[in-house]
Amino acid sequence: MNFKPNLIEIRKWITIALISLFLLFGYKYFITSKSNSSIEYDTQLIQQQIKNVGKLIVTEGHFAEVMTYKDKRETYFPGLSFKKKAIIVINADVTIGFDLSKITYDIDEKNKIVTILSIPKEEIKISPDIKYYDIESSSFNEFNAADYNKISKIAKANLEKKLNTSSLKNNAENRLLTELTKMLIVTNSLGWSLHYNGEKIANESDLKL
Image (cartoon, rainbow, N blue to C red; front, side, top):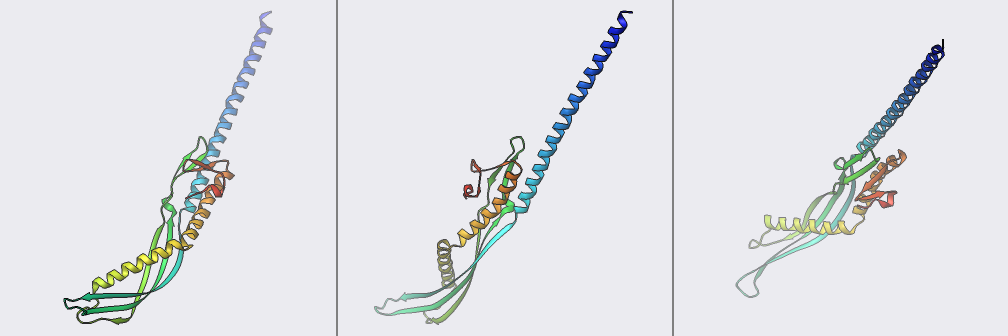
């Protein structure tokens, strides 16, 4: 008669222990599952955003230049030479592009960090249209392929100098930064951080090419 109440009490505590274990493991399961699901969802969003950014952005410009080309061929006779010259008008379309599909990055899911590993260099394309006017030459010093190649190289070099002193490159970089800022916005909104060149990017001004 004395053992019956003790048996009931033992069953009661066993039942409580089983319910407690079930609740504990259930809580851990659902919390862990939710956390993993959240990180996976964040990662997918970030990857999608980088994919959206990964496009070719192009800044276009136009340059015009007029130059005079002169050449003189000396002879063995003093004072006797054969000259040639031409006025060259150059109109050039210039494009500066960034292929952002070539951005390489790393996603650290554990620490919620997106690291930009490398940004592609700009791709510069110069398409000159060269026209020749007032060409003067002689049969002893005529314009030939070497002259045209030389003029083309000089024209391209001058255009590159103009490009470097213009605002075109700066405008192209600003457009690039605008696209990269989209990555910063999405990572911050999800509670992640963006890193580049070994530093954390907290705002747009921290993005330096």
